[in-house]
Structure formats: structure tokens, C-alpha cells
Image 1 (cartoon, rainbow, N blue to C red):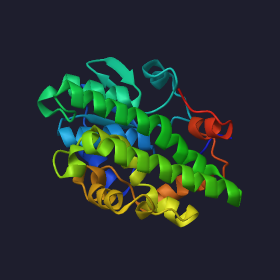
Image 2 (cartoon, helix red, strand yellow; image 1 turned 90 degrees about the vertical axis):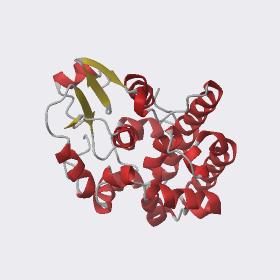
Image 3 (spheres, helix red, strand yellow; image 1 turned 45 degrees about the horizontal axis):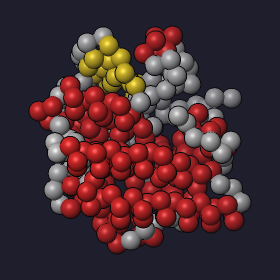
Image 4 (cartoon, rainbow, N blue to C red; image 1 turned 60 degrees about the vertical axis):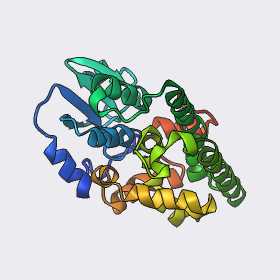
Amino acid sequence: MPDKIDPPHATGAAEQTVQKHSSPHDLVFHAGWFCPFVQRVWIALEEKGIPYEYKEVNPYKKEPHFLKINPKGLVPALEHDNKALYESLVLLEYLDDAFPDSAIRPRNPHELGLVRLACQQISNVVVPAFYRYVQAQEADKQKEGHEAFVKALREVHEQWFVVGSEWARGDKFGWVDCVLGPWVARFTLLEKHRGFKPEDVGPEFKAWCDKLLDRPSVKATSSLPENYENVYRRYFENTAESEVAKATRKGEWLK
């Protein structure tokens, strides 16, 4: 049975942000408040300070209009001047191309290449490790999940943050921060249910996490903690029916 999104809308600071962006606009952000892939793009929109219209989508209902925007039926998606795109990393690229005056990515081609590599590493290694860890049920599998997740985060931090996150060095907030940030915002769930702590990765990583969680764009796109608990409870029980959860159970990852 498909998962029920409870509550069906954003809460807390995120609800206030939705209300600020409820008027019609030629840039429409199709979103789900609960989804970390959505929050990647939402953080970028807030960082860029560009006007947009927020539309809440329940991806489990697969409404015909939204399937025309994204045939996969997944959020996030954007409509800009009646043209649609989807997939979070593609949307980050698009927003910086369409609104270059407030670009988040580096302008130097080599630095941009390194940032793209970092984002690939996060999406292809860190995020799948997160869901395997969350959905693991047996104690030995949870231990394996913890070790694999810490290793993946440590590699990203040591290999890529030096070049991929200017903000981690005290400079400009960037793509790497947008791409990994939503999962950092869910670390409290991991700590409660699996015992993970950011300091397991290292003190510098912990400092970056603390700094990120205090960022206005992250706060403005975050709902109340208890609402994430409602959504992620099914993941921790390995009963969630999202496409991500189903792929994780099969030992696969979404492409």
C-alpha cells in the first residue's frame, strides 16, 4: 500500500516559506516537503533569492498533470515558462544557467568539474549508504551500515570538501552544501534510531554540519522534526513503499 504523507504539507519554518511562495509565477517548483531531493533544490532557490511558486505534490497519487511534467512521477520538478525539467542535480544546473547573476556553482571550469565529481560521489555513494543504513534491521547489518555510511561521508569530506565546498572553508555556500545538506538535516533521526553522530566522521565534519543547520536557507526549507519522524518511521522499519525504499530493499539504486 502506498505511503501516506502525514502531514500532507510543510510545517514550521518550511510552511511559512511555502506561504511566501504561493502566488502564481512562471517558475513553478513542484515539490514534496518531506523529500531530501526536493530540499536540495529548495535550498538553492532560497539561496539564489529568485521568485518562484511552490506547489505541493503527493508522488503516490501519480496525478495526470504531474506525470506530464515528470513521467516518473517523482519530485522535485520545475516548470519555467511552461517548459518542464526534473531530477535534483539537473535542476541545480538549470537554475544557475537560467539565473546566472545569483549562481551558486564556481565560475572556474576546473573547480566546477571538481564540484560535479563531489556531487556525483554524494549521490551515488553517500545517499545509497544512508538508505541502506536506515533500512537495515538486524544488528549486524546496522553495524555494517554504520561503518559504510561513516566511510562514505569521511571520503567525501576528505577528498572533496577542500575543493567542492567553499563554504566549508568559510567562504561561499555552494552546490556541495545544497546536495548533502538535506541528509544532514535528517541526522537527528539517525542518531535516535541507529546511534549515528556526525562526530563519528570527524570534528571538522561535525563543525560543518552545525554550521549548515544554522544556515537560513536550510532552516527555511525544514519542517518540524516530529513530522520527519512520521515519514521516516517506515524507513527505519523497512516498510516504506517509496521508489527509493523499494530499490534499497532490492540492493539496487535509482537511476
